[in-house]
Image (cartoon, rainbow, N blue to C red; front, top):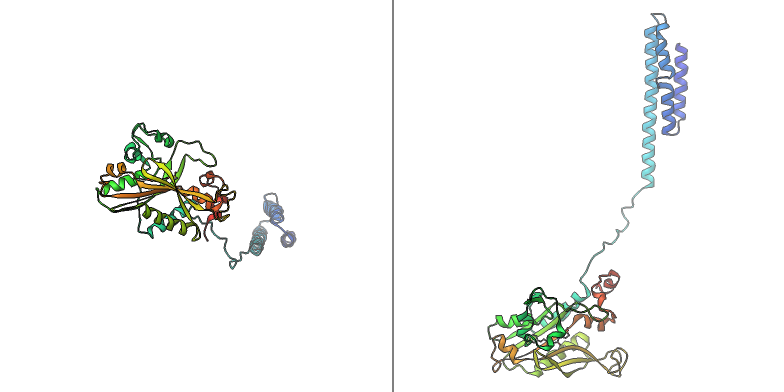
Length: 344
Ligand code: 2U9
């Protein structure tokens, strides 16, 4: 019996040593230490042994069992350590590699352009004024010389909240409100940027929501030549010193006289090309002397005060400046479009 146990031990330890993976080791365990294994069998057969041999064989069987079990555990630990070591070797992280750059956002092209225009006018002493996008009929139309039923209202059809409230169709109500706050006293010198809304069907050149930047200067002795000087300075700083401006007569209900300003075409230098449609000039903005009715409604005496105003569409300016062919690019938020204009 003792020899059998020694034999079993040698056999089992050899198999443990030979086991190459967890499965083989488990098989050895089941084979030698399992309920139907040879050692259990020896222990079961103890009853048949002479009484005095039982403790010796019992002790020995337990020792053998213990030894095999310890050998299996040690081998298992070794295998796990080896597997971990292998994994660590294979999955090493090179902490000295440069990190992946984080995706950073930036101002929208229109925001940058509006800020650039604001800065130019701040440099000429203007202040920035803002107002509500949901506006009352009075400031959006009436105070701008567009009484109810005026035909020019048709060109600025809007989204109405109620009969008297609407999404503003231009930023001009901000100037009307600013003038009112000054209570008939000058000077007023503001630039009003912001979003505006019109009931239009979207296409390459129309959008139901777009942006405007308007300016207003009201004081004593303000003349058309002051308007021309400010606009000329703006055009040269924005588009280049070599650009010329020209003013053409136009009509707006809130200004009289009214003009439209063109700049000489950069592409052809005034010769005429596809960008300027053969005219040598590109339309940039509208402007004029503030209508006496508008001054009066805002609390100014038109015999004492005069003023000029102008308005432009940043989308149009960006489209000209960067050769963008569709206004919808500004609002569909395709990062491939927007990223082209990120300043480093
Ligand atoms: C007050 C008095 C006068 C603002 C003006 C324009 C001319 C003009 C358009 C150009 C293209 C806007 O973006 S656009 O659609 N604007 O041509 N705007 S004068 O005149 C005002 C405004 C407020 C109290």
